[in-house]
Length: 276
Image 1 (cartoon, rainbow, N blue to C red):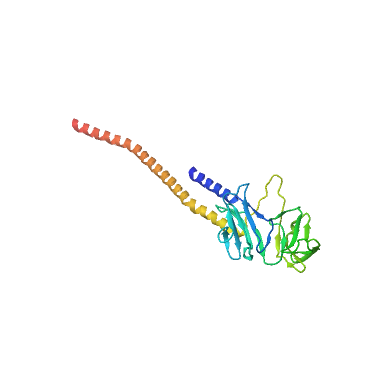
Image 2 (tube, rainbow, N blue to C red):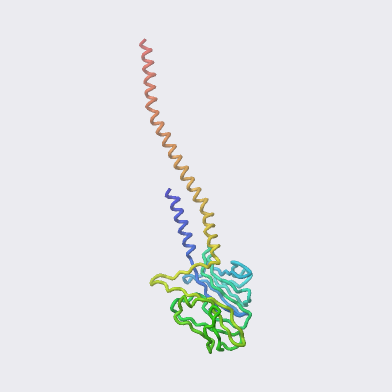
């Protein structure tokens, strides 16, 4: 039974490697909110390599569509979007050709005149984070009010607010407003703990793609299970055939002495009759 065990070990190893492969999403320009008509580039990188990765997204209109399928223009593992519209708002991530996925990011496209410039990815605990409030046409240094979870934090005269040494208590939904121009959509800010010394940080795959990771596991099982079952059957048949052969050899060995005894009896009988 060593062969099936080895095959099973190889299968589980390849499956684990494919599921733990992860890439990061790079956004240029690096922000989570955009005006309609803006352009953005999304890139996938994994250990300085981008081969085999594609950009996918979930929006209110579509699910798990890849770049080039009705939106964006793919260029290797980069997706260029030259004219954003409100319908492009959604979650974006990188996906490996065998099913593994990166963590997702959320992009918001607004038809309004104010956006909040905030980090796209989770920020490290203890770092400083600067939020900026921008209008589409006016200068970016106008006084702006900043809000967290619907409550006013403070008003900054230059339109910039810095959160010092962020912790998990700074997580939430942030937005800003500029008088006579309007307010921005809300964007989420999340804080991640610092990794232990010598240990790389890990990111969980997006919840929106957990179903296709499960599908990836199912496909592996469907492909490899018949092979493993057939191998087990062949090994079982081989063991039965070997056992039957040994049993026949044993019976033949026991039958040989009996034949010699019968031969002796026949010879004795013939000899006796001859003397009579």
